Length: 333
Image (cartoon, rainbow, N blue to C red; front, side, top):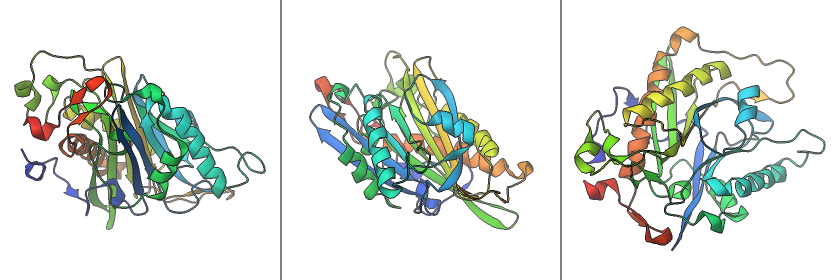
């Protein structure tokens, strides 16, 4: 099975087939791979300007809340994001939060003094099978490295925050995909980035084929988590973005996920259109009519599905904490 031979959905892919096909979005990694330390940081920058004062409309949706992410409550309340999105392992959320604050204060010295505080968005999965999470290996410099080295081209698989992740009892990690579509003569892009750490092998489904059922022995527990980030340049409101986040679960389910009780599936969506400028008294935005959203919903579903499988096919086998190993899907096949 080759990734290039697989057909995910019916829509046209973006130029890179990455979330960074949405103009202005960049992604950076810092990968920590040293014996029992198999973890890292992945950073997503929504645009290249001052995001604190020039916020992106956003929405967050918790499919199942067995997780420790930070910043979701304010996204749900205010409908915007004002920092980069930082992905890491569960026990490093605190360190990543502090590092993100330092990064933002360096660029906006008024935060917490002459201006309001800031809402870092930190998203996590538990990579404790392959990584010694108690070591708290993720430090400020690792977050800064991921942020400062973010670009349009980035690696997928067992890299960055995805280094120690497991998916369908195989090697998981970071995946991405994108779609382009037209509405009213305008061309738009939607992309997704996922961090995969969930599932049991017998459920694994690729392009509708129950691949895992042929590869698995006895069924294992399916607990775990998946972080799904959706970006678009379509002019949507935060309410409409909430509707988009709900479609991520359709893409998740297409790969065979059943969302167990001890799983943390979290979706954050944002648009680079319709910036929310902090000191403008009135926002005058153009927004797509709700009856124009069908391709947006389909794009979100297809991108999440493809990104999840891509996170596995792009990963290599990793051995880490306590000698635990997760085999790469491409090797098993």
